[in-house]
Length: 374
Ligand code: GMT
Image (cartoon, rainbow, N blue to C red):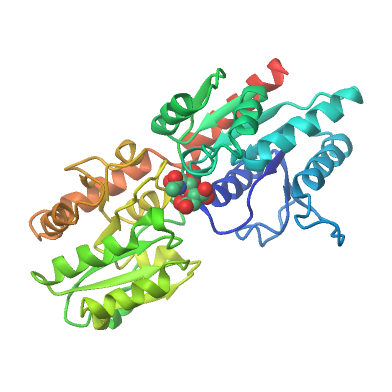
C-alpha cells in the first residue's frame, strides 16, 4: 500500500506511535509518506520506503494565527494526488482529522478517492477535544472518517460518552519494538547511580500537570524513609522547575536526578527497578509499556486505559488517583526482594503481548476496510 501518515512530529506519545508505525509498515514493504511540519524525531535515517513531506505555513502580517490546517490540507491533496496514496492515516484528532476531511472533499471534486483513518490518542479527546471550542469539529471529523481507532477501550468509552460519535471505533493498542526495548547490560551505569545498592525508581514524562509529577516525588520520599533508593526523572516540561523545588523541600534532592530529554530511555530503564506513573489521565501509557519491556514493573494509578496494560498484583500495582500513601505501600511491596523478580518477569511477558508484529497487522486490516468503504 501507499500510506500517508499525519502526526505531531515532536516527542509526544502520539508522534512516537505514528512514527514507529510508519517504520514498521515500511519494513513490511509498504511505501509510507509522512506529512508533518518538521521531521519526526525518530525518523532520522534513510529507508527506500519512507518519505517525508514538510508542511510549510507561509506567514503574512495579517495572520495572528498562521492557518496551519489549510496548509496541511493542501499538502495532503498534493501528496495523495501525486504520490497516488491509497489511504491517509491521521494521528490525533485536532486538527488532523478535520484537515483530512477537507482534503478528501477537494480530492473528491477532482475524481480521486482518499480514504481517511483517524487514530484517537488521548488528550485529543479527554482534555482538548471536549472543549466547546473544538467539540463540533472533532465530532464531525471523527464521524466522517472511513476508519476510527482508539488506543484503549477506555478511550473508546470516553469518546462515546462525551461526543455524539456514531462511527464504530476499533481499539488498537500501543505497541513496542522488543528488540530496542529490552534489558541491557548496564551495570557500570547502575554502580554510578546507586553505588551502595540502592533501589532505582524511574519516571519519564513531559512534566505536564496530567502526569502528577508531584506525586512521583512524594511517593519516592515515602519509599526512601523505609528503603535506600534513588529517583531518576527523564523528560522535561512546564512542571520541571517546581519539581526541583519540591525535591529540595522534601529534602531528597541528593537522591533525585533530573536527566532531561533522553532519547535512549531504554538504557536508563535497563538499570531501573520500578517505574512510577501516577497520572491523572492516561489513555494507554506508552511509557509504562516501554518500562515493562525492559523488565521494570509499574506502580501506577488506575486512570484511563492504564489497567488494560498494567495488571494489578502481576506486572505492578494500581491505586486511585492521588492516593500517594497507597502507592508508597505498593512500591515497597513490589520492591521487596521476595517479590521483585516475579514482577519483573511478568512485566516483560505482558509487554511481549504488545509486540509490534502483533499490532501492526491490525492497522493494515483497518486500512483495507477503510479503502473498501470509501
Ligand atoms: O502523554 C502525553 O501527554 C502525550 C500524549 C500525546 O498525545 O502524544 O500521549 C497520549 O498518546 C499516547 C500514545 O497513544 C498514549 O500512550 C498516552 O497514554 C496518551 N497520553 C494521555 O492520554 C495523557
